[in-house]
Amino acid sequence: MSVSKTRAELLSERIADEILAGALPPGLHLDEQVLARRFGVSRTPVRDALRLLSGTGLIDIRPRLGATVRTVTA
Picture (cartoon, one colour):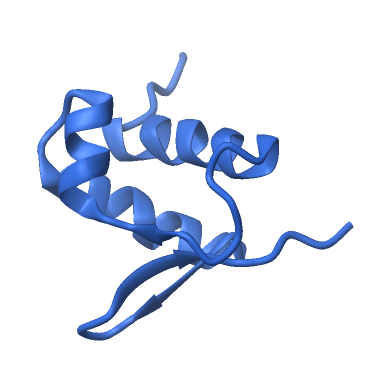
């Protein structure tokens, strides 16, 4: 039986790929509306994807300030 990924999980993988490739550089503010338009989704899966990425250490989420890309170390 295969388990399909949620939209937020798929989106978090795409954002993570862009962070690791350098397309989203360290220190960049990740605007939910901009990401939603870019990936053709609503803000809810973007918000959920950012929470997932926060758990991986790729981004920081600060209350009332939003999400920013962290510096990736080897």
